[in-house]
Image (cartoon, rainbow, N blue to C red; front, top):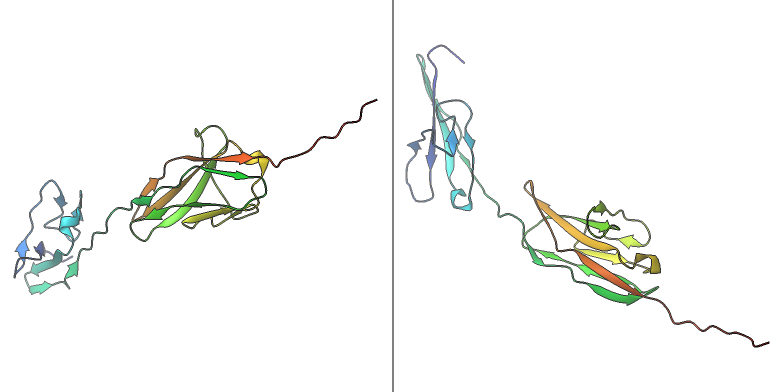
Length: 178
């Protein structure tokens, strides 16, 4: 930074033909510095182009323009649902999201108070996918509660909690009379 250097950040919206100077407002800070900070960014700001106009005693220069892209927050478009199945069966829990996200399935053994992330190990597969497979379903899984969390752009959303009801296999008890 040289003596007498001034910075003026500028923007051009999708509608405007030319750049206009930014001013510090509630959502903009650093309008006359080398670093611009935007807060409360919304989808309506997507497409806005920013540049920095720099001057000093020796001349002026304008930075390369950059365009802001605001991605929509992730949303679950299909929640997982409760399932009832028999011991030994293959069960699939399915969720869907509105946009590209990362996935993590969780399980709770204390009625939904504490959730722990699942790992890809028998009987679980797909713990970081939209579909969680449980194979084989075990009688000890009855009462466990599951949920999936999706994340994108530092925003995460957790699904509704669901439960798998595990039905035991039929059995026959033979007794002898004495």
